[in-house]
Length: 111
Length: 239
Image (cartoon, rainbow over all chains, first blue to last red):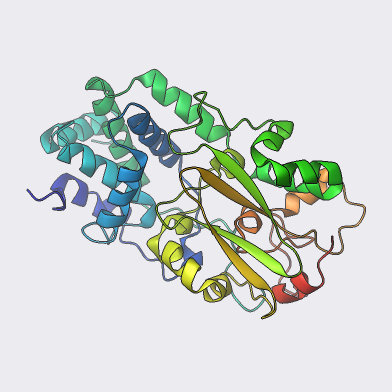
């Protein structure tokens, strides 16, 4: 798989989040949701422990967010890029991520 | 901002699908912890720190500087050190800042002749210890590429129209330097307390895409009628 090929497990989340609908910069203003600050903390941890440097992650957000994941809302780029980059690096596999998400859905009582 | 509909602080309806991204976020985090990449304690520390950061600290710095010339001098001379006077230590939470945040903090003073704006063309560097997490638009290539090339056009998209004789200085943040704008104190705020002043120093005024206005706080937009065009504010701005 090319390093920029979208992962199906990530593309599968598009229907739930909905396609981006911003038309200009100001329309990107929105209320932040709690998972975003937790995601930011994960980004800090990854950089702090040397697994995914902040600048590398931000460049991945730009590259992937403007191409293969361009249909996603801008605020999802960190989550998508981090998951994508960690799978590319072999930290975990797509199958492991899919299984973990299924496990969490059960834990959250959504299945 | 009377001719444009954007209100930089209006709550926007949250998108659907948040639950699925809560699951994705937690899945990535738990897998990383299970693989030994970082610990749950690491995550707790960074989360706690991130959630404690808000634009309130920047607002307080500006309001205090408006009222205290000696503090203003200290703030402009050494923003990193002066931040400690409002309880912000740029070395938190690790002793060397966050992996993406340290090291030097500069406060840029607006004047009747010069309007400052911050950007990070390389990535999305932002003075998080004093402003919290950056808005989505700040991180987009759209803002980062265009603000340095077409600053007046981008500011106009935010409803900020500056007179042609006002110089716009765009400051490009980087790994070593973080910037924040100190807007001019607007007329009509004479006799106000530090708390009253801090309330009108919103996040966007410290990024530089808006100007503070009496009656306009982050929590409440001004009435639709009688809102002055922002170009009038800068020409009539206070000290």
